Image (cartoon, rainbow, N blue to C red; front, top):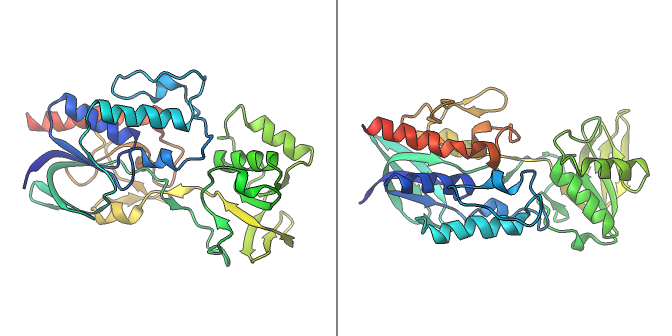
Length: 322
């Protein structure tokens, strides 16, 4: 069995960047990706635009050319998948990493298709695959969705959108403009400060004029086939008619996978323990890269500010190999 210098789990932008950095330094490597290349981006809303400008999404020193000030989902897919093709990145798609274990100086990585051995492992799995569940009655009904792609299925429907982050705000505005009757249930007293600055005034104005209903300091407590039940800021229980619920309450990393790999999780946010300058975890030669580093605080890391992780990791691996 070939022993790889580096096995990378996750083929998102940061995983790809790690592979490019390994390639540049003549280190044998392989990416294991459970879906397609940049799988999370593929599942983003169809018309999503990034916070960052194109140059801040670049990897491997390859220019990201976009005619718009903020590139969208399709442009990003073209860019990152194009890099994987052009640079002939060594990547196995539709193969899920199941277990990482270590014996002596070598890692064994078991996947849905094979077993690999590597001197170093980088986990760059993001957080978009596991919804942050509300754990309330009715959450498993077919009308409840934890992902939003486009507004057209919700025309002339009574929508409840849970949350006030970017995904919730985008869904509220887009479905409203396609003829849905939109009600937002928001646990906090205002729209999230993290909402894109060019979108925030739009949602606040639509709420102020009554085009979109919003219940702040409120919480959904039950979902039935034809209604939702929520507690408002006065503690009163309300029930309204409803056709669909978009529970856009955020997403979390696969903490079980991290824990089973031997990584210590710390604090309320379950931050995976790692060295800030090398990205190495408490397991020697096991590294983290990208948004997975933030635990439950998924706003801490994103493409723009975690591109540096790949350089930090490869630099540390090369230093150890001297």
